[in-house]
Amino acid sequence: PRLLFRPNFTQYSGYLTSSSGSGGSRRLFYWLVESSHVDASTAPLVLWMNGSSVGGLLMTNGPFLANDRAELERNDFAWNRLANVLYIDSPSGVGLSEPGPTDPTELNDNATTRLNLGALLHFYSLFPEYRGRAFYIAGESYAGIYIPLLASAIIDGGHRPGLINLKGIAVGNGLHMPYNDSVFESHRRALTDAMGISYSYRGSSVMKTNKQRTMPQYTCILLKDSRRVNPYNIAQRCYSDGQLDNYLYLNSTGLTSFLNDADARVALGVNENFAVNFTICNDTLFSEYIQSVRDVLGEFQSLANHNVPVLLYTGVLDYMLPVGLTLQLLERLPPDPVSRQDPWFWCLRKPGYGLQIGGIQRSYLGGRIRYRTMIGTGHFVATDRPEIGLQLVQDLLTAGLGHSTTESCIATAASVDWDSNLGWRFAGLNFYDCSAAC
Ligand SMILES: *[C@@H]1O[C@H](CO)[C@@H](O)[C@H](O)[C@H]1NC(C)=O
Ligand SMILES: *[C@@H]1O[C@H](CO)[C@@H](O)[C@H](O)[C@H]1NC(C)=O
Ligand SMILES: *[C@@H]1O[C@H](CO)[C@@H](O)[C@H](O)[C@H]1NC(C)=O
Ligand SMILES: *[C@@H]1O[C@H](CO)[C@@H](O)[C@H](O)[C@H]1NC(C)=O
Ligand SMILES: *[C@@H]1O[C@H](CO)[C@@H](O)[C@H](O)[C@H]1NC(C)=O
Ligand SMILES: *[C@@H]1O[C@H](CO)[C@@H](O)[C@H](O)[C@H]1NC(C)=O
Ligand SMILES: *[C@@H]1O[C@H](CO)[C@@H](O)[C@H](O)[C@H]1NC(C)=O
Image (cartoon, rainbow, N blue to C red; front, side, top):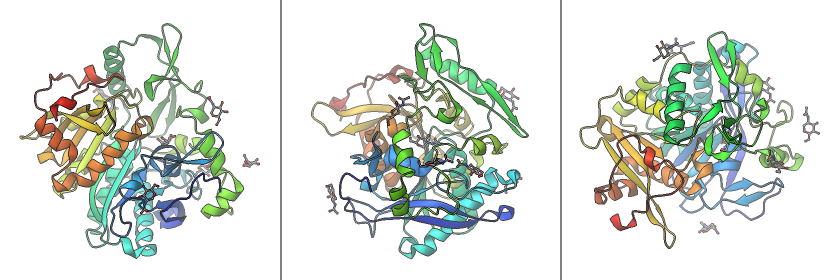
């Protein structure tokens, strides 16, 4: 229903059942879209996670995007051009998944990791054709904790490579450490200073305390000239006035209406015995969730040591999880002796565009951990710049193969006048045209 074109790829949706330990068994909603441009029977499998990942499908990197009239339009930069893509709403209580455990102490990262692994194992039993197929996990934001924990659980559980053939992970604008107000604030100030933004008021930061953690909630950033900018992309206007149910600052009205449409829910196999109305963010869950008390650097190292490439990237216009955070964490690793910091490029195959600087790349542990800044994008990289998002997944899929577009471009474009200070100079919306370099 509400689809404006006829897709030529196969889709499946429904529930993956997982046990989350003392929380009991839970059904997580999934939507699998098989590949449209490469042979689906051999293409790799990518799991995308961003909370309500189905929301991500319909707004970011899925084969169709929900418009204002709750119809689905074709997305020319869909990730299923390159791979089969699996979307799971996780943890329980998010999106169309079954409501979470009644015991709120079970709303934590360890329980979520068990839940995600259980759901994945159920997926492989439902879809045996994917066993041993190259598998990648990508996501953004809080998935900066879920993804390395899930990837480590796959390794520790001995599920590789016959069943879950984990070949790499990617996280955009991830949270990889416990929230620390003073650390976040100093990186945010570095960002706004570098951008020349002055503001009289940072937006209200309502501190919510929940046993083990404190999480601030931000409203729009109010500039001195009284304009409001979006904390998830400081080059964009703010959509909401910071009402909690709108705090993600993207207008998700269209996809929310689609996912609450009775015919669409029947087609998707939504189980009305427990599914509630779709909301892009579950505020109850947000306020009850218990965040990890440590960072995930150890998981990144362990993945690298198991030859699982890690790609971390940050849209530099994000104020919420600002660019310096991940870099500061990674700087505790020994630097890569070969390439420490280089520009990376993206190639837009359009007349007059060509090769352009995408940001900077640093690598660690022999290149198995790569960190990139992404210019001209905020928190939601693939939403802000879908063509860059598509190149990212391409680079993720080719990471282990040694012939990524990005790397070969770097090799031939050595003489770019480079700013060592995190590429701030390139943080604005204008791309530096360096097509002559390649
Ligand atoms: C599916 O449709 C797209 C868009 O029309 C087309 O580019 C692609 O080649 C088609 N794929 C197959 C396998 O037919
Ligand atoms: C997932 O992505 C969609 C689209 O970019 C966004 O609206 C939503 O807020 C994201 N969820 C999280 C938790 O980041
Ligand atoms: C969000 O989009 C809907 C249409 O889908 C529109 O009616 C509404 O005004 C938009 N909200 C904002 C805050 O722009
Ligand atoms: C939010 O999550 C809680 C806990 O899992 C669940 O009980 C509730 O139904 C969810 N609400 C919505 C609107 O999804
Ligand atoms: C989560 O799991 C880790 C590793 O197994 C363990 O060290 C930690 O104590 C657990 N945390 C909680 C809150 O259960
Ligand atoms: C937060 O970071 C500051 C500065 O690095 C540090 O002094 C403080 O101990 C940290 N707080 C917590 C709770 O880790
Ligand atoms: C759920 O959505 C339906 C259809 O959009 C609406 O009629 C109903 O009132 C909503 N229920 C709640 C509890 O918001």
